[in-house]
Length: 426
Image (tube, one colour):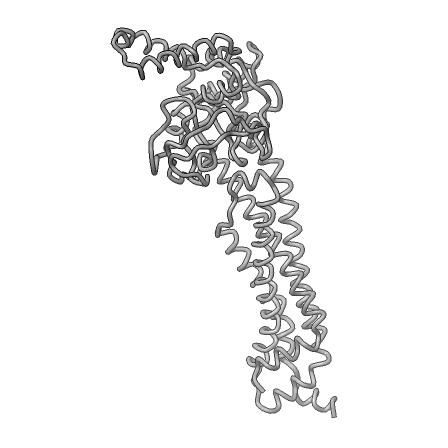
């Protein structure tokens, strides 16, 4: 009889205990995998999406909500702020760069962001196709968005699927961004005026357009019929502009010149204006600490389950030895060495651990996949399974726990007194 048959026969004789040990190990591994994957995803998103953004200005409300909605695009904005008020802080001497954002619409759940081309430059984004926008209702899309060059689409009101569609205006895709691994992969970028005009607000780029219009006034004296139509269209837009409401944006992303400004400037903004300024580093530290408590709880639970599984393996093997000592003594009598007996008992424990490890990894991968589809922020942020050193450490720890739990009963079994045990059985 081969050693493997002996191992399976032993496990079959105590299948209930073996099955319990497998599932305890599996649940421990699953929880550990989920904690590691969620933690890894959060850290990646925090570091990649928040890089270089020192201060966020927006409407009064929750500072954390402001950061999540404008930097990570996984929450609802706190409101809008007057562009004129934001512009004052854009020109502050302590501000190195400022990126305005105008939110409010989406296409199939992907947010349409009115901004400047500095937003792309901030993340060092490059185009795989096409060009950047140079007039309203031209759009540049992220790599995760299922649209093609030249495609036209209409935005829907709101930041989630199911809002009222703006059927009167159509965006046209003029560029596609190469994968960046950042939030840009899941955004549709367009000019500020595109978002402002579609919501009946005054554009913020009209002064530049007027300057260009007056500069080219002499050239229009000899225009043809096509140029005349374009001139009338421009005048029509100017009349609409006169009746539009004052421009508002959703948030302003600032990069400061000096580290001390990251503390002093938000205080000044919060004290001297009706706006709210939040420091992403501070708010993310608070969020991480809150998530850390939950992570520690789940990690402790996973460790407890793995320890209980190891104890269950130990109890199962140790408990079965009393009934198997006669068989083991017989095996020794017919020529089985101590090391071979040791190997058989250890194999039983390690087989249970390996089964639990495989089942746990499968359960963890499936659970993570389901949760990323159910939890909107995870889906929106592109959460994916990734192999990490922590996962390798968990696998090694589980195997070591199983080996340790199996080794003590195995040593006892290998030391069985053959003569005494056979005399007892006769």
